[in-house]
View 1: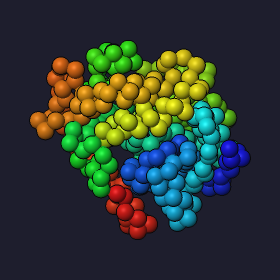
View 2: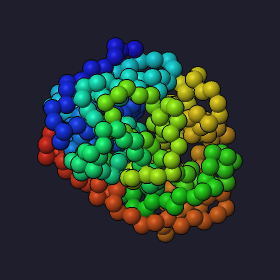
View 3: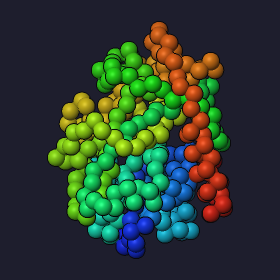
View 4: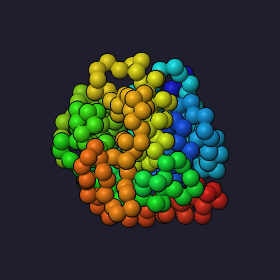
Length: 310
């Protein structure tokens, strides 16, 4: 594994917001992710490439050569050391003077503006805040990544209180109806994130959240197989209880039990604007906010760096 990361110091209060993301084999979405977080004003986004083989690392390396606001380091390890790597990266950003840090996954778009965020929490020396997933749903016919495929998304799912690990893994509720919160913070002190960036250690419990996170949990049918066959074998080594990274374990079972088509149907939008999951019909909410966000991200990337987000 690489040495502990270091970053150039934040230069002003207006550029004190940074992000951190571990990514693996996400070439279809990573340009849009970069375009979004740069456009909304993050002063720096630190990516950790976890052994990608699909061009994700090469894209990030190319972009990092054009702007100091993006950095990427590559790690190769047999086991999924997400918690350790993310905490090293986040604490290095804090030590470099970035006061507000947003950890995020490669399918999460925090709906924020960095300048407004800094102003909102400017009076407070320390602050923990949360975002909640709004799960957007891809069309059933888009089974594999394709150019501009994410622009076809036009619905979000309704969060259901009973869409839990138990009901999702029992094939009773759609995964896209499961919602969760993610943590972010303003601090000058080192800290420890829990696995998945849902809370801090010691655990912070709260039902309050300040922001929405536009989340694309299953952006194509192929994501089910990727989660089950690419992600899960490495996560299984470090799982200490069934609740850790349970989604990838579920998708492994889906693949091995040959239920991929069934689960994709349960988590993707039909033309009429609903999902059919395990014999039940669930309504979806028409929502073009993600498409608008992705368009702005794409245009920002193309205008600023002459890079196409496809």
